[in-house]
Length: 166
Figure 1: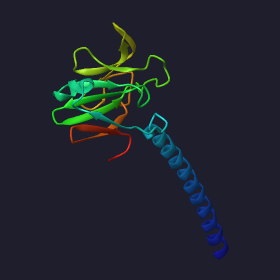
Figure 2: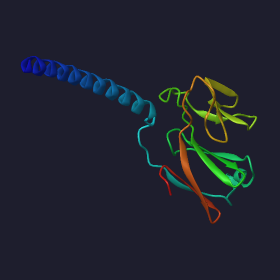
Figure 3: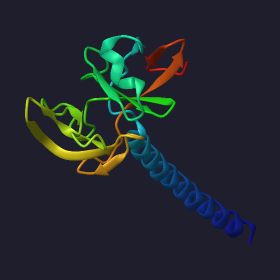
Figure 4: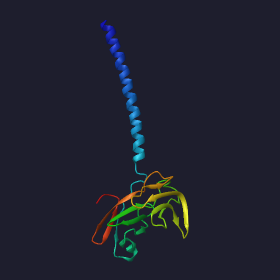
């Protein structure tokens, strides 16, 4: 009787070990899939620059709803937007197809949202994604991720835009 109980115990343990290993594999796969979805869609880049709000090229930022482009920073440039006393900065690369040559985000002529494409001088549509100016989230797809947002801090008539908290 003791041998039978020991054998049953061993078989039960083997089944439990197999179940535990299978569960671990499934959980690990789910974790990997989630971490891929949550990873930033751009490789790391350092952004750190100042905008003097009293200079003519930043005049639009003196007023609520004003915005400017900064080229040569970020991946395809950065849009800086003023919402009352807050400044927001978004990368101009559309998250739908970051590697596409037309994947630039521009502020729509309505000044209400941003959309994938460029004015040159007329608007050339790319993927038709649209994003809210106040937060960079998707208004209309096919993009399913918000725009990459940078940190902004105002001090002494300047704003500092960085890729890291200040």
